[in-house]
Image (cartoon, rainbow, N blue to C red; front, side):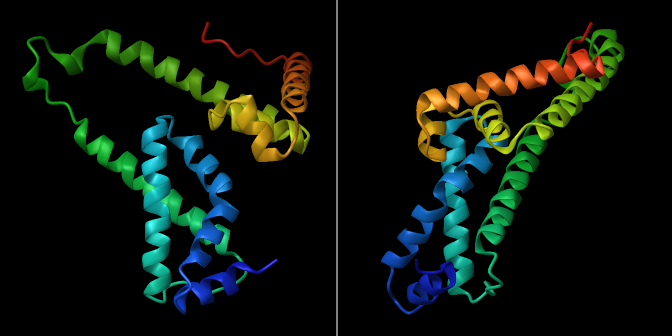
Length: 192
């Protein structure tokens, strides 16, 4: 198999089809990573395309130095684009108290109870991530792709090269293992 570096060199030398090979080689991993953070399918696809556009621009500008970690470099570009997206959203969602008749920022409903709920929610997320980290690799992969990347079991099966039944079975065993872990460690995953 031709290395990523060799494909990039060929692309730089004018063989544009080589970049298609690189995209096809890494598209599932990059898209799954973006989908972990971006639930909106269309937006995830936009960020995916932006990622590879930035990769092309950087390669053409001579900014890529091969160290055998091409996919890590691409993931870092995707990660930075995701962060930029959330920064833009945060800036657009700034709320002014002058826009509302009541005092929005002095609402007890929006303050006191949400701080506690946020803390509990963060602890639940931490506990779930910890349980997932203890799963065998194949089970962990299915849980992440299903619940964090939002992929269907058919997409998971295609991505991992197994049958749908195998993907479903791995999810079943992952849930069983997570329940056992919850019971052993006496973990509660509820807000109440």
